[in-house]
Image (tube, rainbow, N blue to C red; front, top):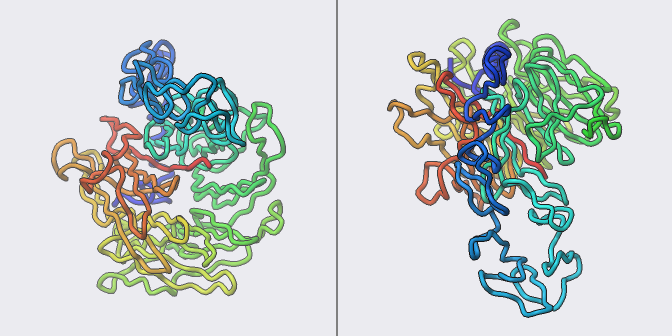
Length: 537
């Protein structure tokens, strides 16, 4: 069957993903510390020698002050440069103000690379530097409080800008937006399936342990323990944060779970507890959550056991009182002209949704369950009018998009990730043997205006070439960080002037560099699944 929907079709995956998760265990009493792919044993810990500043390139090889570790080598952190062998910020260093060696006259300070008599209003004076402590990574929240590795300063707290979950490796990895620098990979959970972010924390829904785990945005390897971690079902497909509430849908147990933040927790987390849960109906297989006004819109994929009769629709749930959610109705998607190929079967099989000022948009995979879930129509969006439940389809074009899997608003435009038609190569352990029409489509005023085709950067069919399959993405700084569900990469594509411009990838010569190797490939497994990404505001 094709690779699809987070690398596997969403209803079948619960078994397959669980099996893969069993391979990500971090230790064995008989063998000592055993690390997942991309990590090495240093003492009693698993560390990323490619990004750990305390073990850069080798155990115990610590980088110097102001340095970070990238690809196993120490160098000056983004935003600084080497001046006389020291890594300094020429934006604020009074001895190198604006350029190496440009010392300010005695009594002056350095602010934004310029020597001044005193600090501007709204900045803080740290020595002879004028700084914004809410955003300065070298002085985050207080003078001298430097953020670790490639973390940024978010409102005075250190955290990564984007976090990726590596399902098949049992890891999280942070990314700095703009520079696209990778932080060290860290082992986390046993089968994180989806991510969200809130108030400096990453929420990670772990399907293997049926828990909603929490980690501070700068301490991804450490689970924040609370009095009672929230228990979920076995296949949490999406998490929506709507303070003070968090909503989770589970595609196996067909549930919507509501959690509420109720003050500081014992372990310093968000203090979440479950306040309500409803069943959306047997065999509905809910996939995602979008909020419009006081209603949630939840795509229902359905299941093969019921001939998908319970799916191909969107459930509307009233949350005017979030602690008493009520399913109002379902909006059928079967009336859309799905433009099936050669008159064959193409079911909408909705996978994700987003809400904008213009309405609710739902990504339609348009697959044929009777033919190994291959696309049998173009990737599409369904636009739902909340006022009357009216639905109309938007054709994304079969040449650019098959198997539309994820949609998110970027400004007044929509970006759609197309998972494509990916066929497994059973002779190569089940990895993708061929993929077509996978990448991104940009939609403006309900019309596709630009596309970006994913390229693996190698010749398909050659030894060691792992094809790329688009999955979920996060948006930070006007750029899309797109996960690769087959080879573990993260592609970076800017949304700019109505175009999709590659920044990290293999398609254009103008790209800043190759796609990020976020989730390392384990030679024992056919797939490296960058399953989800989230951006920390």
